[in-house]
Length: 121
Image (cartoon, rainbow, N blue to C red; front, top):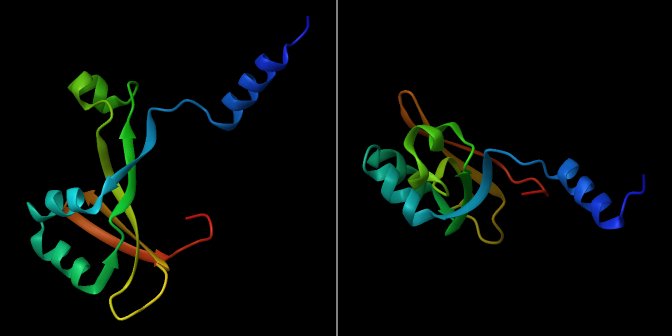
């Protein structure tokens, strides 16, 4: 049995980038701000007053095999869901974004965490 070069690369890609129910997707901070402000206005005000937050961040994007898509149907495929992560920096700081702020929805409501940016971010 001979393996064609094209088939070999397809196999390697599947190993390196497995098919999953969630994929990455970009989301704007304005979308996130609007979503969070509806339920937790003080939280989003505090984050916005403390940090300069990049206008575009990352989120999970629902794929066709995700549990939520199976429950809610085709209309949610491609929807961005928390956690939402954005590069940010302290308001008092100049220069590059050196932090990452992540907004997540938990049982008790919205929360955010801030960590130092890694080279891979």
